[in-house]
Length: 349
Image 1 (spheres, rainbow, N blue to C red):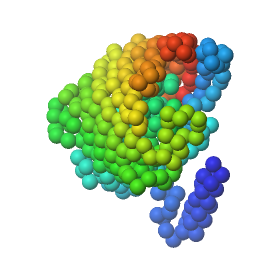
Image 2: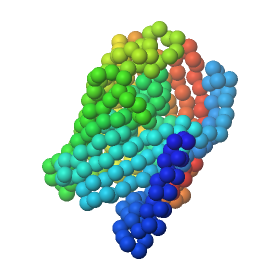
Image 3: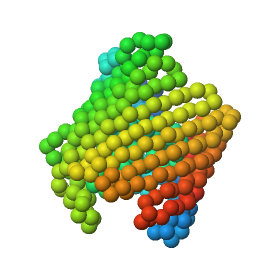
Image 4: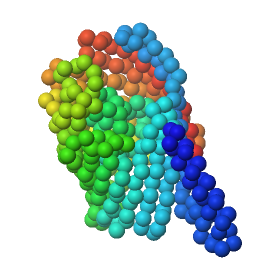
């Protein structure tokens, strides 16, 4: 955080001095460029949660999820640069990349970015309907840190991708694709082994209201686990990290539905999950949210949990919403079931 603030102050000082020195000599200064080419925006999420889970001995707490600030620069007609930082409790740089637009069919992006794996991972957290997201996506896409061997990397990594839209079809494009090579180690760190991971994502868009497809991730991770579970790869040990998914989205005026199946393999441990989430629009501002969310972290020992979720969402302004959700957690017998109540306020700016 200190380094980031120092960088911002340094850039501000340079920009100010540059603008003053060239005020009468050169109109093409950093400040006009920023005003014309760079868009700054973001959002914050905070809320309250209650759980009667036995191991938590009933917990309730206010919390801040994230405070995201983004800068999107259209440097030239075909060159775009992007920056995202989370100032929340786990402050870190999320994205920093440049993308060159050769054509609608071919764009090249280099830098820290979202890995093209699953539909939900490629969505913004400001639009995901479930406050904590689907269990399987949070774990297998490396979003929330529930995978202790890989860590919490917000579904992002450092690498290079090709993407685009292909084949004119029904007033749009039939295929949308992304393929890339990544370190496989997550955000803000170098690769810890010599292997690069492959990720590929393909969606078929037969009509405006329906699209479907899948994704695949093949790689070798280097464990960051420092705990005592002997079944997990220890820190510094390389292990197989493979995943694949199938999913669909249905978008109509009264309802939006998204569903995905996800399967993963970490070393010798197989996992799988699936979810279906519906957003029912009662009015332009009020939605009913319903979701069925199943995840089995280890199929060998049936370490599984099913979440039944029902909630309301009030969209009181553009990118601003108030969410309230009840979750019944049907868990393995050793843990017992639990009831969870969550609320979240999101302010976009």
